[in-house]
Length: 313
Image 1 (spheres, rainbow, N blue to C red):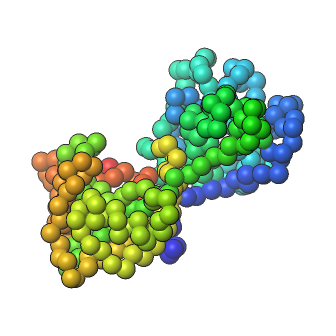
Image 2 (image 1 turned 45 degrees about the vertical axis):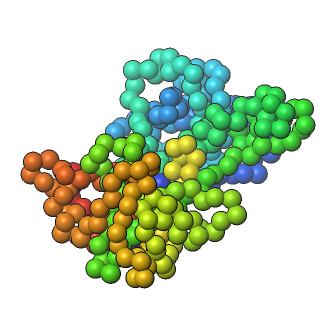
Image 3 (image 1 turned 135 degrees about the vertical axis):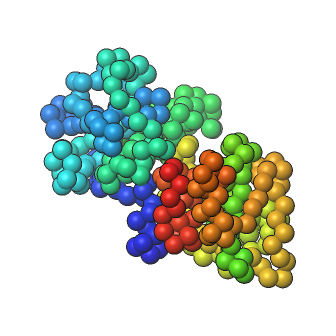
């Protein structure tokens, strides 16, 4: 992955030592709660507490209500944040924001590209693990309620005594170009009709990433591609994906007639750079809206475009 491309992946940044060995300590949270250096990242309804429009708020242990699911995120490595390097950080999922309800809260989708390296990585980590907890409250083996252990990184089935670990769903996302170096963009059925992005899909069991590229593109567009090339990856905790970015070229033996599947993809369009620039910057309002700057889709599109696309998004 080139340095220029990696710099466009805001959710792949990090400045945290996850300190995984500490998770094994039975009294980890008691130790952390007794340490005055410990800081809490409050999470409420999928958003994080903010200290400014571009910074997360880390608060002392006694600043949040008691209770709530806890996940030990590790220790800060940042030398530019208000908290010193080595500060232990715990994410706490609040059932009730209490006295913090009127404070400022931020969503990762909209803030991710504006947060610092530490804050971006910390919030992705927190949401990824907390979203996993939300879907694994019961054992897949016995149906019994699971018990949270090891700093919030394991849930144990008390009947079978088996451990359940966080899972990440691999998904490919592809910048497809033709012989004229046009890019194919599609509009998903769940979006407004003028929002376009890259084709993407989950990797199926027993499938390589490259095979997933060929299959997903063909299923969603009828386009045959060749030469999938890996660009880089970015976590996307909505709820638990790892987006694996690729480029691919249209197979010259099959052509560029694109047919949306009609279920996930409702519209497909080929764009030259000039056509895309005009479509997103129309004086009467954007003909086309692109994915937001936090996404890997936007990074791949701008890698092909040759730089930032000035669409005001």
